[in-house]
Image (tube, rainbow, N blue to C red; front, side, top):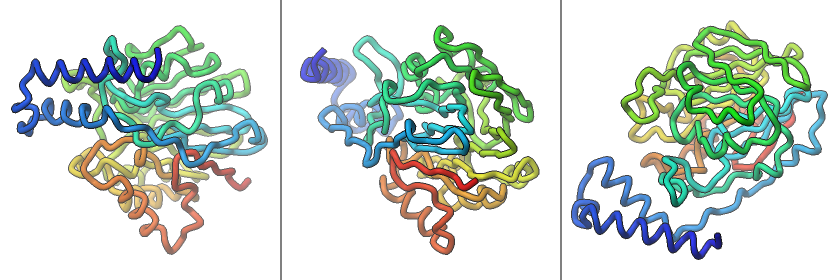
Length: 320
């Protein structure tokens, strides 16, 4: 299907929704549904900008730890040869799958690598069931035949056909995943968020992860509000790096931390390198798109060497 045909179909569907629901209500109401429809209609003509950088995982050594931010909460990791991918979102939208495509927020910046540009993945980590973290179309086309580790009560959403195994972990539980390229130890850690996918399924879990291999550890915060839990997570370190969310805090401060809080939590865990995610890709809240990065740079201005990347597609090779 050509881009023009796809755009026309989406425009027709959006116009039909507007006409059927009531233009006045959609234009004036402050309800979630009305705001959601307004935002989707405004996005129709906006192009998705390409990532400013393109990582080169083919050049990474299997004798160390390399990471690249693909966008939003998606991070590609080569952990001493084991290829790990967190919360993959490859496409221009995340949300509910409908016959025309996906109905949900549109990206501002595209994913830094397409699935065909990725190496075969050994392990996928999924933090929780929200549409911008557990994207079923993306999970269905992850290259290779990876294992998957997920939060409790979320595996029913997983497309299983491409996966060697799918395992749920509750907070404090650990699993040793034997991939074709070696073993990885995964620990589920408590964070402060929520896990429901459609607001009614509150039984679903949410989690962060500690990833360990060859005596080295990484901390993946998933999605979290400010919490003192990272003081406790420190005992499981030291951590070579902390991958932490820094966006979507206005007005969702009870579920998402500010950039300064993200840095403070990484400090509490005593992580050496700070790797910010969950900004720049989608506008999920009211703060300006560039504000999270500006604030995290200010928070780290006295130790700027700890900031591992700034923009989508940038990569880092951690010191051994």
